Length: 328
Image 1 (cartoon, rainbow, N blue to C red):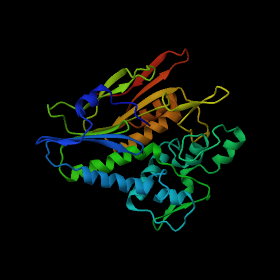
Image 2: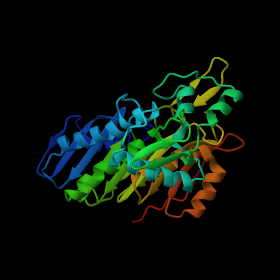
Image 3: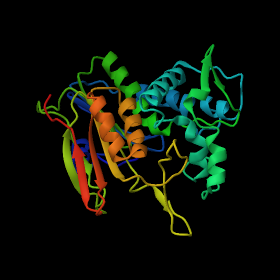
């Protein structure tokens, strides 16, 4: 779930790329988790940059598969002495919950397959046949992960956890909790296109974000969403993909039910809800694997979630579905 959103709206809002403060607001930008972040805090004159940097460091130290010495990297590499910290334990519990709610369509244990298809931190073969995928699928399933005395136990040593599909949203939640403790009433946090907003802008109007039309090369806007007091995440395979020598298109979303990195009929899905950003981040990834019909059924059963689905119908016409409601 990379940077699919935040076009002119957020760029105009944030202005300069440099961190700056006034008597009324704090605006911060930088790089984290392999992408960029933007934070706007209104009606405060305290610059929280150092604290935010420290929190980002703690999240990376616990959950980044791109840092060889992180807690999760050591677990993935077979170190059975590692004790998980509070950050990783919370992320594991949240992942387990959404894994169960989605019937396994969200599953961080697809890490080996993400690497094998060429989209992870470890170099993979990139083009797998069905026999190789079947072999890798033996190591997929979050129900094969247990936590005892704060240690992560894997049913198979080969299992590899990858939290990329929930990590940016989780990082946003960590920052949001910090700002809540500091009594910041109005803020917007964005990491790599995922959003969590509280309160309102300085003009008293809701925070509004524009999502892209995935069929437009120039990142043309599709619609504008009210995200005040909500989290939002967008997932899509229309930017992060690769074409094999045989012309086959492989996308970065690995379906945990099949093990293949091939497209569903969904081009893009944006999920909006008054939940943690980690939740909507994970749901957006799960919906990309589910496809349109299963996602619609899921939304009917889980009315706290709102979503905008953009897809091609049987005649290859651009079509959308939305149960999004603007009002707060």
